[in-house]
Length: 271
Image (cartoon, rainbow, N blue to C red; front, side, top):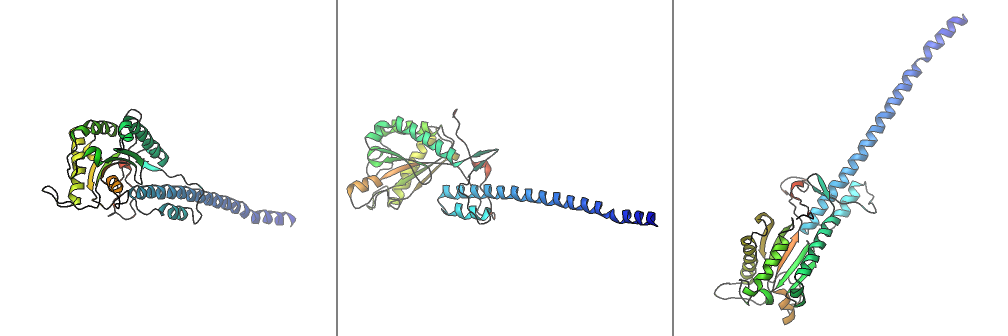
């Protein structure tokens, strides 16, 4: 009797082994799920950061970073979120972009020291990148879109420096608010655009900058850097800006499309 009872008790307790195995497997399953959740969170942060950098480079949505960071982190904004620009197989951080632009700025300032001292050229960091500003007094006759012959050596030096970078160059023509109407131009729009395109054509003729890295636009009097109420301010506004910007492309037709990785380029010391 006791022997039969002992055998029955052993048989009924065997389910504990299977139960323990089941609990162990469930524990492992949830550990794997937790690990995947953490990995996805990191990817969300990286994607949101890349989108934010692209929008910032175009001047859109300055508050995007904070909003996307909080969303990716589940409502808690991290103290310092690394923001990387996807660039092929590499990651180019904004700090690296800034370092590249500072290096270009230093080389420009050294090469154009005479023009900077004469106040015909100014070099500073802008919202979209490095801005090399060419004042009208040093490069154009009043009402003309053709660069002065004496300004051509300076433009060649600038083209040579810009051609060593892998970033885009956007050439922007600007005027003051005094209306123009002569035999060549009926408005400041036409004058500012013509000046920008003449500089672009010169750079292309010199084969200094690849055409796909170059663009030109005219803004007339609508992007002033100084007041148009004084002669000095109007003189500052009559300028052509060469803006060195990182390359990016966003397809707004594609829903939730991140920046295209293939359109980011990195400056190397050999370039």
